[in-house]
Image (cartoon, rainbow, N blue to C red; front, top):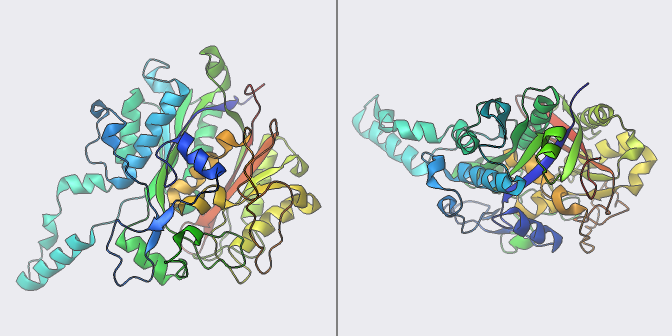
Length: 433
């Protein structure tokens, strides 16, 4: 029989706040973390807004003994969130044996600095030197690796157990949490740090996503209104950055040490829909398979699900993007979908922008406080081909004691294909039963 898995700690660094409580307050209040993009000079770009983390210094949060060398901007968000999650869970190096603790993190390699590329190109053109790229320092090669931040997280615990790095775009951190769940279920670890981090605020991100036509260009002068999932005025998504990390533990071990249990993870599903690189299929396939797998893994029925966080990219005036998200949920849930307490991504990405590998983890962070709060109504006007959902408002919360929710994420990963993941969790006051 597989072991039960619970969540005992949450950490977050987002455009809404530099820790989990302030991020949650921003979500509850319906605030947007989107503003002017300051990490690059946006002159010449069609897009000049993003969801940026503000005034965060890792050295103010995490002791230098952890080993913070070589961390670039994205990694600092992940390490900061991990440190907070461990403090929230009351976990340190002595809680479990190092071999029983591990890390599963969604992330991607960092992007090179534009000025460095220009300088190297100019040097090569001026001198003809074939070795112009040798000016690239070995320490920079380390910094651009997605593994450096995970290694720093492991050092926080002297963790020598399973280490997993996932890079599947927007679903990466969701996959990381799911794979950590499996690792704990199967007895390969007792505790896992799981989540994701990234910073999609570089020149290359703005250029590439802009060329794909995925970013909104309509709200440069009104960034607070730019991210509009499921709204009839949606025109593309907003880039963002941040990190969210969870502490997952085997239930009996968590109980034995007196941990405060936030939720229990019940099921996990993943899928590949072999569609396009730039959008989701309009019939919701891929999402349907991952949702079905997660529900079955949890031993539930579709009618048991009453709280959903969709991907909600603010894309797709034609029948793709947000429409595919909604269609996938509706086809799995049937007529009962109209009674879902559905939360679109203004409760996570919608307020902070898209940070790809961090997105799935940010869908988990709102869950941590959802049972205790009820934000005000902030529903969008449904766009073409979309139906307004009944139940809790967008950005709304689960009712106290509400049993379970499914979160589904699906984005491109690999040529001509998309991946998806879904998880079911149970959240009750007083923790898992």
